[in-house]
Every structure is written in C-alpha cells, then in structure tokens.
Length: 359
Image 1 (cartoon, rainbow, N blue to C red):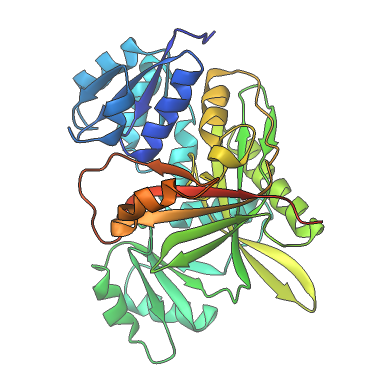
Image 2 (cartoon, helix red, strand yellow; image 1 turned 180 degrees about the vertical axis):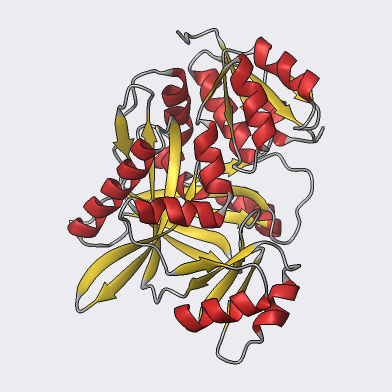
C-alpha cells in the first residue's frame, strides 16, 4: 500500500510534473522526477531527480526500483519505456491508455467502438487513398498526423481549394488521418479521475477558448444544458472504465447544436492532468493534481466541488511579465512554472480567478 512517506515517481519534468510533485509533497509523499532535460521545471520541487533519456533502460530500472509507483505528465512516453517501468513497479495510468491516446487513428477507433460520437475519420497510405478518403468524408476536413501532434502542430485544414497532396507534404507525409470538420458551437472538456478499485469522480464541464491553437482561457461552468453536462461525464466514465484507467484524464469534446438540441462529439483523450483542468488549482476543493496523486496511490478521491464561477487564463510567452500586476489583483491566484526563458507559444504560467456564483 502506498502511504505518506513513500515515493511517487514522475516521468517528465515539465510544468505538469512540477504541479503533481507539489501536490504530492502536501500529502507527505516524496517525489522522484525522471526527465532528459537538466533544466526541467519539476526538478526544482522534487526530492530526487534522474537526468537520462527515456530510452535508457538501465536508468529506467534504477528509477523504477527507487519509487513505489510511477506516473507520467505527458502521453508520448515510448512504449518500450512503459514496458520497462511496468516490469519493475506500478505504472498508472497503464500502458494501454498510453497506446490508445498516442495514435489518433487508434484513439478514434477506440472511442467510436464504445458507441461515442467522433468526427468521421479515415487513415490512408498514399495520395490516392487520401483523395478517396476526402471524397467519402467531404470538405472542409482536417489532415492530422497520427502521432505527436499538440497545440495545433501536425495538422492542416483541407478547404475546398486545398491541394491534399501539398497539405500532406506540409506535415512531412507522416502517417496521418483525415478527419471531417465538426461545426461546433464551442469546445468543452471534462476532467475526471478513477482509482484501481473503480471509484470515479468528475469535475464540472468547462468551456475552452483557444488562440493560435493554444488554450487561452477556461471557464467553469461551461454554460451548457444539464443534459450535455451529464452526457460529458458519462462519456468520460465510459472511456475510463474501458481503459481500466487509474489517475486523472481529460476528454476534449465539441459541443454541437442541431435543431435546438446539444450533443457532444469527442475530439481526443489526454491520459494525464490537463491544461483545461488548471482551474481546479484554487477553483475547486481538490485540485486535479492532488486528485491525480490520490488516484495513482489508491487513496480516497477528494471532492470536486467548485468554489464559485472560475476563469483560468494561460500566460503565454511574455504574458508572464505582468506577474506583479496580477499579484496586485485581489483574489487572483498566480502560478508560474519556473521556466527560464519566455518564448512565443510557450506556456509560462496561469492565473485563476474565482467569482461568486450568479443567482
């Protein structure tokens, strides 16, 4: 049994790993972070660190034997890395969750197989098959790499006048899918947690606004119908149970309104704590980071109750230079990630604001 005083291993040293480590410390756990970059922000708040490549089997084994359970902060963990860690310690979430979420074709096939709506999609092997797939799916559509795409990277919009072959060349002719465009009203996500014993808890659905393909603002409540909110939680629970998932996950969805009725179309799964769940740090009784620690350690899940109406805004690049102004604002909760250099498109921190509930 994982108890206070045990060691939580964290694969990945970015801001998510940093905030997981901080939450673990508040619960009396030690943390050991494994990452290849010696400037990893999570190293600053961890009890121990290992600086080594994710493919370094000897160091992975030493890391696994030094901790009581391992989790990760990003989904592109190499499958060999997950297998090595699983052979020597507990790994949560499991390798299946990684495999499904790492490949857009496998992910959408998995979700559709659960009877959950996704955009029409197809994979292809050459230009002829791409053209044929577009003929079936129609335009506009989106060309996406099957792996390693995030924050808008690895995808191209296919409009009526777009040359599909040129678009595929633009993303390096990587293994890809073509996906029908969803005429959504807004983008929403649900962040939820599940333990190995099957306990499940979901936070309120949140509405997300993006700028240049990067999450800009999250607002809770999402302003959708009760039926849509309940459907979102059912979807998240179905996915978590089908994966035998342990930990926090986020399910990103499109809200579509047809004939005055709302329905949800799943976009993708994130098998980890998620940017759209940052509002819970100061906006909910239990943050997503504490909830993740509780879940992977097999502890009781915390309440997901909100503390009011919440807005979370990412601080991208030089937005973080306004730290003093934000600190002067009553009620604003500033979180900076300890990154040395501000760059365009780089997430440097976030600020959470909590407001009284409307009558």
